[in-house]
Image (cartoon, rainbow, N blue to C red; front, side):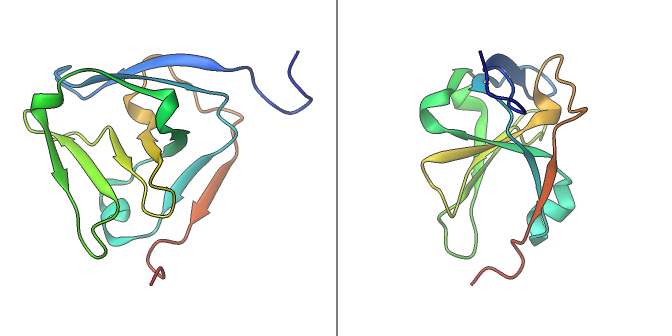
Length: 123
């Protein structure tokens, strides 16, 4: 049984647009987040935060390109073939990934709270 208001753990797979990069996550989707930093505003991603132990890269490590700026702590990953951003290693919690939920197969965000995070004002 799950506590009232929580969701059961789910294992979902996701991919970039061309399918070269494939991954799986396990989460109960406690919330989704947006971010107002200059990069996240431009890519308009809706993310779920998962611990690195709940993330598995299934295929495409050789197709991933990375982008870092400012403190060089967060690592944003993109498919070199189709350009899609499927996930990034987080800055504030570098043992977690931010997963672009639009890349998850069959995922419906209905009913999951969305929290706006403030990245632009981070020192």
